Image 1 (tube, rainbow, N blue to C red):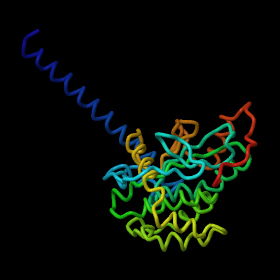
Image 2: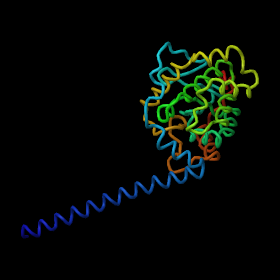
Image 3: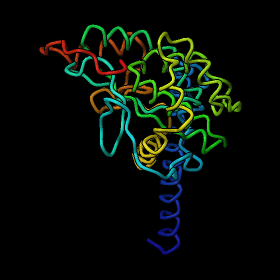
Image 4: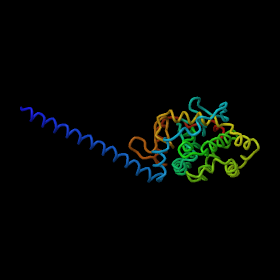
Length: 273
């Protein structure tokens, strides 16, 4: 075979390889778009934006100095969290979220009732890791201030209802309303028995700021795409688990599958649940 023919064959093989690589890239992009479209259907456009973009930006409060004061009943050393539900429930839902994150609010509004139901039956417990990514991305301090207030609510045994109130009253992402303690205290009035002198002192003094910063640092060091990051027994389930899209029905199914042959939890709920 002549040198010219060999060069021609080599060029043809190179072009074929390049074509295959372009096709693989297009297929990968197509799969991403399919997943994104599915997320839109379940949680709305905000979820796609949050999943893709929430992990970019600055530290968002991770430089807070001072002693780390964990709220009552907190769990985790290197990965601090607020636990809810019965401590001996056989399955654990791990949620990393930011109170300013629109995608997190979309997730909470879609799955809140299902999570509460599974917790009530002892099938599931949850661990909430509070982060401040949006403060880093957008500027401001609302993520940190709201997270500290939620930790203060945990001290009062009111984490779950206050957590839910914050998400159902979430301002627009560009509106740093949660940076104002007055707003956080106003919303505390929607939770019976929460607005006490001790709670106000905790909120206004930033008692748990360094603990929140530690949680945010753990998030940034982890292998997460953004907020919310949701795992069931350590396996990522948002926006999908393997080839199944997340939904309230699928969450119940996945928990039932994971709990097969195991006893439901019966211990008293964790403080704040």
